[in-house]
Image 1 (tube, rainbow, N blue to C red):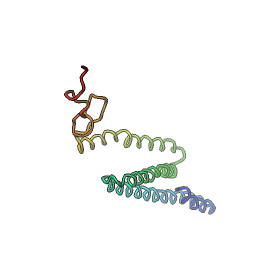
Image 2: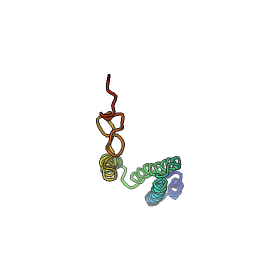
Image 3: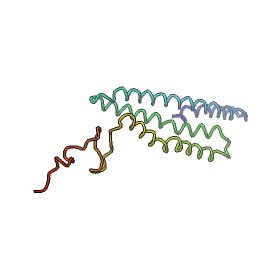
Image 4: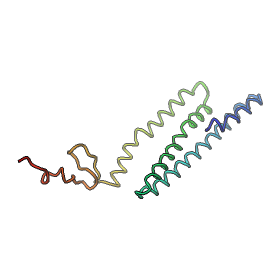
Length: 158
């Protein structure tokens, strides 16, 4: 999407032929791609908000899944544009290092802390919801074992 929107801008500047025009075109392209990224993020956030609004209604589970899929599509659609903006704004010699720093930042601020943050939010919102690992822990929310796993209701051999 970013290429379709920005290639005409860059090709016009290259046809002009002045050295400044290529740098100016790269800056305009970076600004245009940044605008597209902001619009995609806004669409993704609006889809997430709409999905959260219908999440509590069991009859609208299909709408919820469609809205969340659109949100993920829009939000992940920004990654190519971010890489392009980085490549347009740093000198060619440092592009690999800049992209490596981008990847490090994405992992450092996204993949690594997200399980801890999501776990803390889950623990604060539903402290008695447990994860089931066989018969060792409570299943479901509320901290009780299902009736078939309780010792007093389990069938004993004759």
